[in-house]
Length: 261
Image (tube, rainbow, N blue to C red; front, top):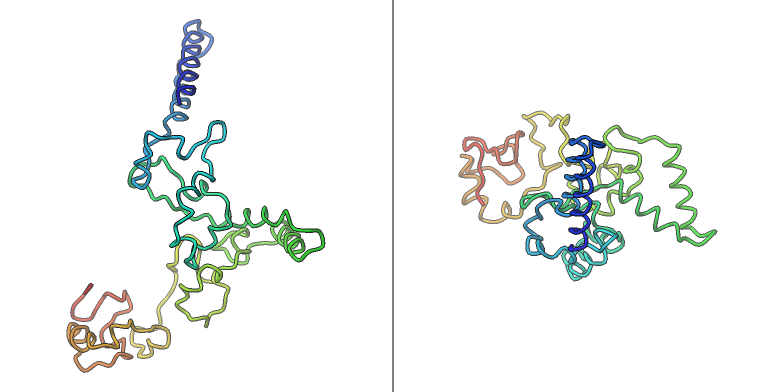
């Protein structure tokens, strides 16, 4: 940091002298000066890394920038990431800074998933495949598809379309496999919600064909609290329409927006 500070002072002083001689406009001097300042102090760290505010070397390496090796030193023992099915892919990604960006303030979200990046990482991993192997054939096929094909759905990019959604999201499949594995026919990669989705008739009585009631509904909790709150003390668990409305699961008839827990 001292070396960077010295370079900043020397460079700024040199620009000031050049400005004084009339060779460069002041606006250009200010722009360069601001850029140099941001290089040294790009912004406030998130709350998760706030304890590293005065320890740049904990994450950065001179002339390299953010060093993935240093990220791993702190997070390699995080079993909740490496052992959970949706996030186990981190074990073979080998890069962190693209999806986990820092210096954006204390309240910033550190995780911004870039699905296209996973495709790029996969291609890079396959570069080391042995000639004639299945891995090499897969890489050639994938590269050709990315070069000549089109995205199968408007809601995702071609790079995202080659990913296997179920490999990470099978535990989140509320459809229990009934709709197949082509998740992008309905879902986008930046949100689960489907704005154009139209729920079946609000008078439908077959809700449980698609919706499974929570475990509490199969216990005394349902008769003692849930059904009574909705004013339907004699309702059965499978009669979702007796208490719930299609606007939201928490929009309960007679009670309105209701959250017990």
